[in-house]
Length: 406
Ligand code: PMP
Image (cartoon, rainbow, N blue to C red; front, side):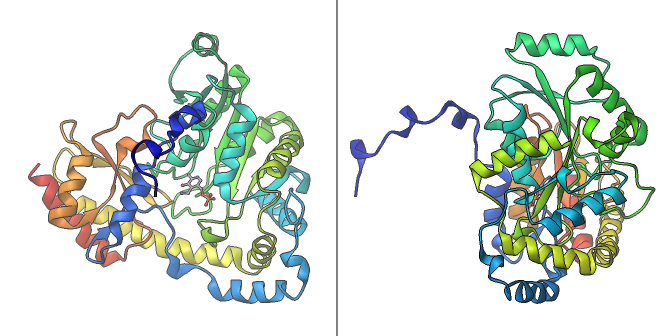
């Protein structure tokens, strides 16, 4: 065993990018939440009891009849699955073909590749404030500067580029999840989307649209995706600056790690090079099985999920209305898995969590983690996807009781 001076000092050999790679507060927190008596609204994950397990069992069994299911395969992804995804994108208003699709290992891998594709250290990425923590984690390895993406913020494009140049790079991309965002649950309306696209055209940057929750709408009219709007405006996918990241994780099975990117073919060709270098291809069996399962039950399964999750969403909004004290506000999401709560300015959600875990046994994620600059200390994220309606009612009552005495 090596002790003291015999321990390797890695700091001298680590790459500079590692200075930006930190353990996620959420993942650390989730490790502590295994105790059965904790009512957890922390994990942003689907309910495992809703996975289409039997369909996957059949699909994998059938796929394994052919040894090709265990063989290496092409980096672009399994052909029939790319074709299914292209048809799915067409149904969402994006005329495209399989050449516009690459299959990735979840949309998380797509975010990693897109950081590498677009960001040189010190370039600027425009992100929501707050935004999906995993996107910041993926982009951080490319050492960008972040600036808040606010479609209503009237900063002239040349001023924004001048700021980015002063920081040593260029504004390269905007990243956002316009439908039921993680962590806020909010949706960008059609005029906000149009405005964002105008801003992106004026800046001449790429737009990364994260569609992870798009299928999970519980009420209200579906709004065309940024990619559908842009494609309609510029005359086709090949002219579009929007790169759409999709995922089977929230609607079928996250553990299989199957997602996709839909974009102009020159973008897909470069992503294929990145994938070849990183992992050659996503698991062949998982892609074949996902293709079979998606063809069998995607629409009916999504309809079932909408029913279950929307009842949980309603239960959470109802319980918040009943139990939250004056001064606490929250979003009213039309889909997805999250409600975003803003506490009075003086409160610190991380401190509230510590108390909540010890006295009320209720868990959530403090919102500071989702802000690129560590602001948002008085915010928190509640997830309603994995709790029963009764647990939600009980949990919100306990949380309200604790907040009332802060
Ligand atoms: N984007 C968002 C907004 C997410 O919330 C998640 C998962 N939490 C992902 C992307 C990544 O999902 P996956 O890699 O499983 O597709």
